[in-house]
Image 1 (cartoon, one colour):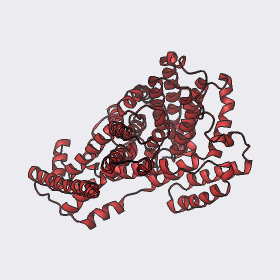
Image 2: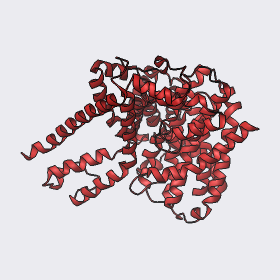
Image 3: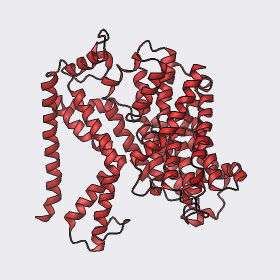
Amino acid sequence: MTGWKPFAVILMAVVLLCLLAQGALAAASVLFGPGTSATLIELSSDYRDEALPTVAQQLYHRLTAQPFNLVATVIFALAILHTLLANSIHRFAMAMRKRLGVPADSVHAEAYGIREPDKWFVVQLLAFLGEVEIVFALWVVPLMLLMSFQYSWDVAVHHLNSLDFIEPLFVVVMMTLASSYPVIRFAENALASLARWGNNGPVAWWIILLTVGPLLGAFITEPAAMTVTALLLARQFYAYKPSPKLAYATLGLLFTNISVGGVLTNFAAPPVLMVAKKWVWTTPYMMGTFGWKAIAGIIVTNVAYYLAMRREFAKLKITPVEGVVRHADKRLDSITIPSWIIIVQLLFLIWAVLNNHYPVIFAGAFLIYLAFHHITLPYQTSLNLRSPLLVGTFLAGLVIHISFQEWWIEPLLPRLNVLPLMALASALTAFIDNAAITSLAALIPNFDDALKYAVVSGAVLGGGLTVIANAPNPAGQSLLQRFFQGGVSPLYLFLAALPAAIIMYAVFALAYLL
């Protein structure tokens, strides 16, 4: 009977979710009635509530028309709460794993004489629940159940099929391409000439990477810039064992700068991509309206963080941790990579950037790249798709949940002036992906240029506050979390990035007022 226990646990969990689904729908129906719409309302314009004078009246009308809005938002809130608890769950799982006597890098319990498979099942289940990248996808399961109960399975499938998953797929491809050893080696050699003024020390690399890396994102896209910059920070800065305070400050600054740096062009930052075509924003327009402010903000913020952390910089180890600055595969660091391999690798990267709207093209080219990687394996590291796929899963789940949040976000945005709207957009970005904020703004009719400036500025300024605030953030966290004991704390990340967001807000607001 012991073998049935894991199955029983899963069955009980599914039954519980079904009961919760029924209860949540029943509660929403009691509060707001059965709903005036028999089908799933997906667009704000379908509510036909433009004549209602207040936000409260609009929200109540939308809940009355579709009580499922409340249920979907509660599930989204629970998913966010889960992300905040993920690190604690993971630490608890690792503690249980240790008590079972299984090495941290082992996945084969039977090889180590585990006599309590039920406990092993619990450990692995908790470890799975502690993976922050799968949280939003996991909470799609009860969301689908609820949609099926309220409407039908066909309606739930149709809604998922109507969503755009190009961005998650693109991030998977870009993370894989940008993290390849020839690309990292090329970027490292190119930036090393800039770091020589500081004797190639960790402080010099810190300044160069947090300044040039984010600006590079305006041309190779933010996901690629995040991947390259995070990997080089691991090799050239985090390897020197910064204090937790400096480690978090660097991570928060990286996330914020990457989010802001992408606004120099009209194709690199996800929140800009969502509106550039509809609002006819060209790259020259982006450079003149946002670009110079982004450059100024990044420089000012970097200087402020450096001055605030100068004592922490003085505590850095003199020598790096072995196997971080030099690649674990020492063979690679001792050989010369042929120029043609680097050129072809960069061409794959550029091709993906130029065709980022066409998944058939960039995904097809990625399949060809996999063959190229295999052919040039003596000059490559082993292909590791785990981090890119986890990040893609995270973003795909977020896309699904965000699709149900328009009902309460859209009425708030056009009722504020420029500076309050900029602040609200930044605050909302901490809990909702910044591309979702701008995509909702693009749906609002008669949105003037000043409000467009405010919502896009606010969306990018708050892009470093949480891991869900900007699409490339999960990639950065996945690549750097090994340097944070127990994983990256959402609270400490927020506190580390908040000063950067405030400084950026001051720069963009002052530039607007002048």
